[in-house]
Amino acid sequence: MANTKLWKVDPAHTEVQFKVKHLVISTVTGTFKVFDGEVHSNGDDFDGAEASFSIEAKSIDTNTADRDNHLRSDDFFAADKYPTIDFKNGVLHKVSDEEFKLKGDLIIRGISKPVELKVEFGGVAKDPWGVTKAGFEITGKVNRKDFNLVWNAATETGGFLLGDDVRLFINIQLVEG
Image 1 (cartoon, helix red, strand yellow):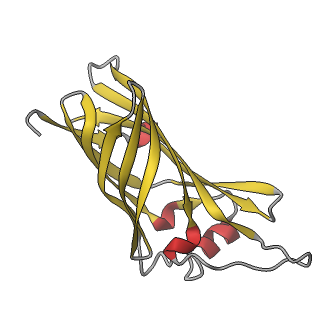
Image 2: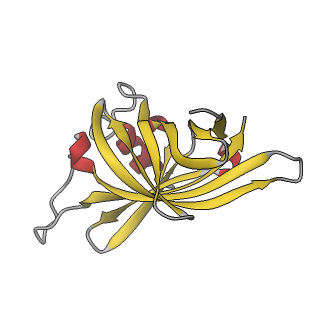
Image 3: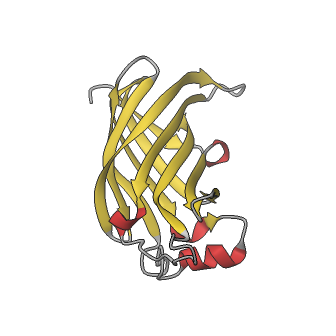
């Protein structure tokens, strides 16, 4: 890119959440507390920008310690063996002034799969200290079984404890520099 600008994820103003069905009747929400990422854009134009992101798997938080420990275990993220969840080779493609598609490779448990996420661009602004920021809301859905997250338990009614689809909700604020 000719006028490449580096943007870093601002962790104080970024949230990484997921939602998954529990017993098919309700939804459990979780967050990841430790992550990092960057975007290389052509100035303030994010069309064609390149993005990467990394999440510390052990930083998962569903507000239930036993569940969090189970999610860190080999049944799910195997966080000791695979300490990060990564998004690489990401490229933003402009759909409209406020919408983009983000295509890239999601890597969980060492398994890489292409994903496409919907991105709503909030804009670019300077904070009270003169620092330039950019905001995005990213949503999407992945099938956990694609990444060998296959643990489940049958219920007495013949259903399963967990849904296969995991919905992603990521609010990112980037800081220039």
